[in-house]
Length: 216
Image 1 (cartoon, helix red, strand yellow):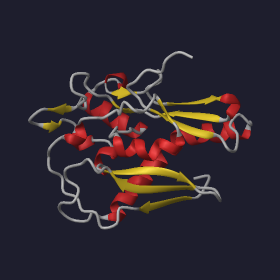
Image 2 (cartoon, one colour):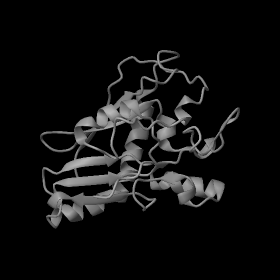
Image 3 (cartoon, helix red, strand yellow):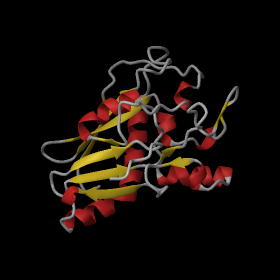
Image 4 (cartoon, helix red, strand yellow):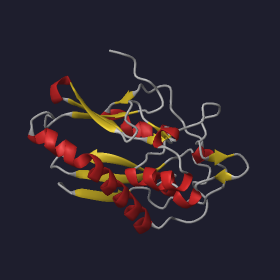
């Protein structure tokens, strides 16, 4: 990786046991957020939503298992279903449009969730599903580098039950997920920085896939 990355479990002695309730398979897109989520609200967005972010490897595994095309189960704000990176405001604004699992329009459930049966792609479920209800907030260090802070989504009914999870296992999943994402977008970001197209103090926005940005 081109910079230092620290993975930090920040959930103390929080306990978790899956209740098999399917709440994590019903995606939330809070109405108080616009299509573009600014840096200062991303931690709040992670806490209030439960979108399942996908890596390229996640998408490839699901395609092989289901024989579906990515556009049948992947959601992005813009058109590229592998995700995209956009630069605005002369390099002062970076927009990361990361792919997420598509939701059913009828009830917001994952397209692979079946009532009464649960996940229909469980053997190849995405890394984000393996992590949930534990979630990651990326924080920049003033001295450079990134901290991947592992917290949890408090809306999950399984929190407070069962045992304290294996922090090492969670940290490995987070590290693998981040590495896959960086392999996908890292070279492009580095190239744009070297070309001066991304400013050193650029604000990084995340999209909320599933909504459609209004034309400027």
